[in-house]
Image (cartoon, rainbow, N blue to C red; front, side, top):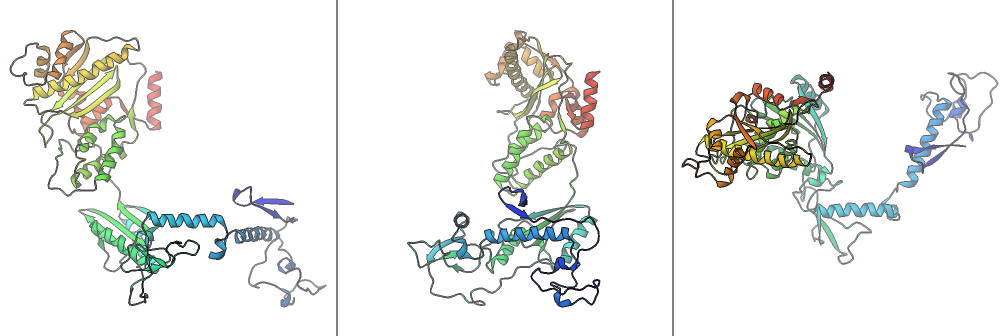
Length: 518
């Protein structure tokens, strides 16, 4: 006898009766759909419409089944019989099986975790429909309303998303007092006469759909959505030309939003961020979550460093203005998702560095923002964008502090490379401020530099010892400029290319590999 496995489960085996298949398209004989123990009248004549109808079991309108179809139907019967034997039919029957008792106990523990109910003495009053609760229905969108929703979304070239809310009813808050008895088999032995007072709705409760709808609609209205005047399950939010549609069908929700325009810069050119004290505060954990996600990308995406670090300064009290800037970074990232650093194999390993500062770039503290970048040949190794710890009274001081910070990073890299057997001196460092370079090369401590913190003056010693050599470079060739201020699209494309960033699409990778082979 052959066997079949249900759902690829080797533990559940169903015997398959032997069936001799006939390679023919001729329908099976009528006896195939007649019970074997039913008396049959024998007819010598050919099967005709005059055959006794009393001998036919099942509906006459049903088409005749072939032997193969009957064989498959037999398997379904076996499977249905198996499910019937496993799944309990009643609550009392479930209490006789340990697996179902454990499942029910887990469900009750989940109720305790969500604080769905509390054990209280049995109340004296009895709830009556129409007195203790009136409205138990929940608005449900019509099928035509959903088709209208989809048709309009297609017309506006909007993207449609679908979401199924798990345990939706458990989030609904009840407007009246509802009590339920303790489940049989799970009665508290110390409080036999107590009952559970519901704090939230349960599945099966008449008020559950209504409570869920009230909670969800209240939330959407608080988020500046407006409810449809005809369809209460339609919610619309408008912000200028932007439109967001939400259609609710109990715990299934569909959204429609316009296709986001991909941006070519992480920040608007020459834009600044401030504390925005008058702005509306937003969820702190949500904003910090977005920032922490983006900070991971700064390890491989130097073009995002300045914008992310700028937004990260305002995690103490973020506002809608800051969230808007963060979302712009995500939109820029979506259009440049394939970008990454490319290390050519034929480049030298000489150390070079660039340093730049944006004097008084911070709108709140008037501190300068400085950026630095370090290369080994044409391979980008290190980059940073930071706000200086003190306010600089001139751009010269800001550039001088930036050069000191870049020098400290170069010295660490120089020491690290000694383990590889590589020694470097006269490391070129480029700056676009001649006064800052002159201050580094002048050992005289004059009045204009005496207020600078002494920890920044070590760069003079490194220049004097020949470890560092400073060179002037025009601003358009300053590679560290991308880490100090918001730039235009054209400049960002030039600088990212100089930094060694490439698009890692399959076509571009193949082209880069061919260039390396040549």
